Length: 90
Image (cartoon, rainbow, N blue to C red; front, side):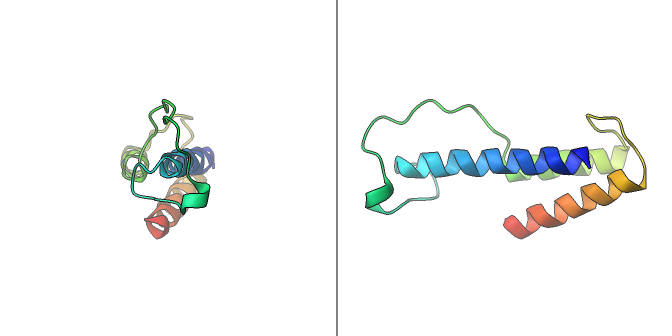
C-alpha cells in the first residue's frame, strides 16, 4: 500500500511541475493565453518521470524489495494496481 501511495504522490508531483512549466510556455503542455505567465519561470525541483516511477515499481516487484521493506501478497497487489494506473495515465 505504501508503494502505491508513494508512486501516486510522485506522479502528482510530475504533473504539477508540468502544469507550472505550461504556464510559462515550456514543456509539452501549453495552456491558453489567459492562463499563462509572462515572467521568468521559477527554478523547479527535479521530479521523477512516469517512466522512472514504473521502472522503480517493476524493480521492487521483481526483487521483492521496496523502500518500506514490506513483502507479501498485499504489496504485490498494490504494485500491480499502481502499474496499471500509471500505464493508463501515459
